[in-house]
Length: 231
Image (tube, rainbow, N blue to C red; front, side, top):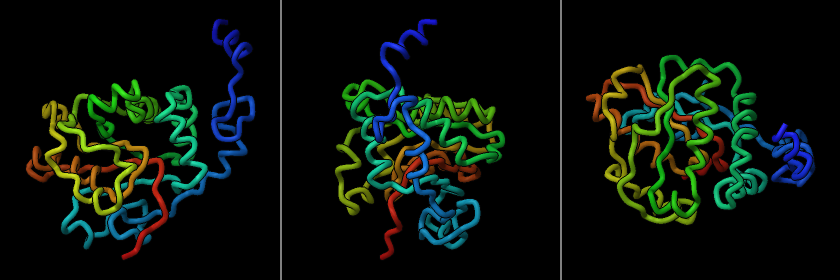
């Protein structure tokens, strides 16, 4: 009843076009451009977003599912969500992601999210990926933990760095907070909103594998990524 009253007093509107009815309208959903399945390293086509065998020689993630292209539309909704405190969009965005990826078999995996520093959390008031990972993991009947990975230091906004600077993120930025969590699952799936070079996800993956002496599966699920950059 209280929720219905709030909807009447403050009607929901799309965070992209402003149309009343929901935080993400059906028309704007259609503007989200789906990514082709690709290897996150070389960005060539790969079934189910699996990392190519040759690309795994120096990299550790088995699979990085990226659902949509990062463009003007997705940038607008993400900036509203991350930097303007529009937490109400988390449910709509999670439901749309679940609808988009369909029946992926996340078997005996532990979901977690990319941690942000105390400074960044204090600035925003929340970690945007934590809200998403809770909804998504529960839909697929998986556990999630926010106590697996910690972040030691802050090196500024990732979105404000150039490509070269992003590649310099070090493994030492992250650490395992509770190693016992890894013993209960066959794999870890890291949720992130935007993947750029993939260096952050790779850093987290490596510390997980180091903790498990390399014998562990680490995957990622991301909302957005920009068009392929081929060197």
